[in-house]
Image 1: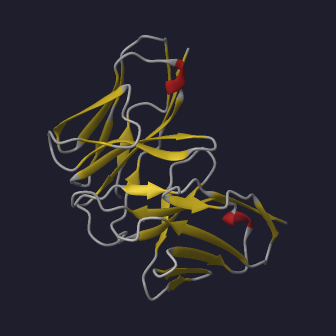
Image 2: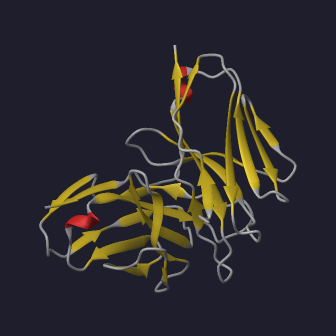
Length: 114
Length: 112
């Protein structure tokens, strides 16, 4: 069974903390993605990576960075957490983009910044 | 104009009803199209891909109209278990690697 695993389901952090969200996939997928999902705004792409050490900005990269040192792991970093980064964070992975390539999601991390 | 637009709903339908969701996309170069389903407090999961010729999977039928840049999902004989949010998803070409672009979702409640 295919699997994308996010390190935490729930996380509470203080404003100004550096936060690491980890994502691991066991499908040998080249592509990995970080989205955030907020009520009324849907899923918005933060960053994605199509290869080890490669990264591309998505629609809302401000306040975030990413790291992909190994193919199976894609980390999202909040350099200095702020309350407006309270959200549900979803990691996904997929094969290289071809027609009708499915993305598989992790279970999500609900982050609260206080 | 937003890249992928859906009616947010909610659609409240009785069991056994037929319900249809529509979705429009703005990028005419889009190549791949999907419907995902997301249950409350869960991650999105692929429901079905959408092919140019249209495709059916049991009670679910998906259609694509490239000329109008329009995708639809039809659910026949609705079940209580169909209650969920349905996300229209489009692959937006970007330098050969194409992250998925999600609509905001349409919420469906099937009522006994």
